[in-house]
Every structure is written in structure tokens, then in C-alpha cells.
Length: 294
Image (cartoon, rainbow, N blue to C red; front, side, top):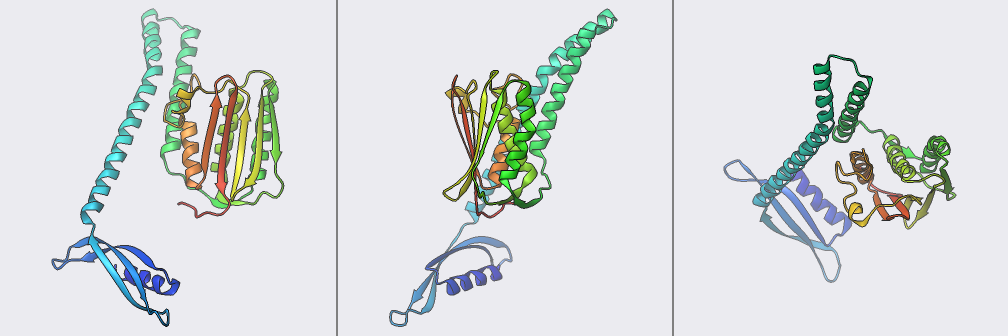
């Protein structure tokens, strides 16, 4: 990794940085490689204030790198195990009535529309779980580009407005003027806004309201979604975002988990505040300037 070391030396010299930390591989006498971490410091002449020397302190971090890698692998395995157990549990629930009603049909040898409706309903439930799980687990080919969040929020609001009107619910939109564009994947961001706004609508009783505000503040563009619905208890609020934990009777929790991942990939953040019986506030913020994660 000589080029890596040389490039970091050059950065230190060109940018007049005081201390620079470099991680690279060094080749040992037997031809094998070990990971090394070096702290490089510039020494300046007191009179001319020019850089005259570079002092470096290095240490072997091979064991630390191996330990970190083992930790990463064990964490991945733990997550896979938890998700597998959760998926198995969620699918087993609808399989139980399917098995029971199929046994009844087999014994009676008679067609019963009620049994068939229940079986089809539970099969749809299994299909939903698998679809949501796959959409969260598999990598998507995202199209990063310039995104007008004001247009996106308006579009989602119009999309859900008809559903709201049919149920005597209301969506109010307030968009600050001159909202800058951000770089991101428009479809993924739309998925997040749809998910959060739909959750807000579903928490409402008739004549309930959802207030959506888009504004710029402190280097961030924020979408604030406030509803006066049923709210979430403090105990449940602490578990929001976990897979297969949902405040809905038949929810999987994967929708919000996927939203969390999308927000994180856009270097954003999400804040949820709720009081049972009073409503919920969700604020999603994205930095105006950031480096995209691929």
C-alpha cells in the first residue's frame, strides 16, 4: 500500500495538516502482510514556518482488525438469526388457521365459502410478510439524482388526499418558500413519506387531521408530520423501528424499518414524539449538503 502512504504524506504537506492518521498494510519478511496504523506529524522550522520533517509513530493493529472482523461477522449472524426467528414466528401464525380449516375441509368433503375466505386471507398475510421482508433485505439499484422535496411532498399529499376524504380525514400542507434540492433516490424518499403519512392517517379517528410542514432550518430540510390520532405509549415508542414490532394489529414493522434504512442512507435523521390519546409528531431531516452513501 505504498501509494496510500505516499498520498497521505502529500496531503499532509499540501494542506499543512498538523497530524494525520493512516491505516495500511505492511509486508513482512516472510511475504505475509500485517495491518499497521501510523500517526504522522509535521515538524516546522521556527523561523521560516516551513515544513522540514515528518515524524511518524506506527503500531501493529493486525489483532485489532481481526477482532473487529470477527465482531462484525458475529453481529451479522446474530441479526440473521433474530430475523429468521421473527419471520418463522410471523409465518407460523397464519399457517395455524390454514392447517385447521384445510383439515376440516378434508374431513367434511364439503365446500365452505367461509373457510376458503379465511384461508385466502391468511395466505395474503403470508405473501405480505414475505414481500416486505424481501423489499427490506435485498439490495435495490437506486437512481441518485437531484430531488425536489417540495414537489415530492405535494405529490404524496395529493396521492393520499382521496383516501383521507373518503374517511372524513384531513391533510393540511404547509411548504416554506425556496426549499433547496437535495441529492438522493427519489423513489426511496417517496416510499418513506408515503409510509409515515399513511401511518399518521391510519392512527386517526373520523374528522382527524394530519399537518405536514416542509421547512429549511440549520442546514437541514425537514418534513414534520403531526397527527391528532391515538398516539403511542412510551413503552411501545421505545420499540418503534424494530423488525416485526408494529402498533398496528396486523402490521409487520418492516415498513418503518425500511424507512429508517433509507433515511440513514441519505445521511438523514428521524425523530418521533408521541403521547397516547393525543397524537404523534414525526420529523424527518436531511442535510442540504452531504456525501452520498452507495
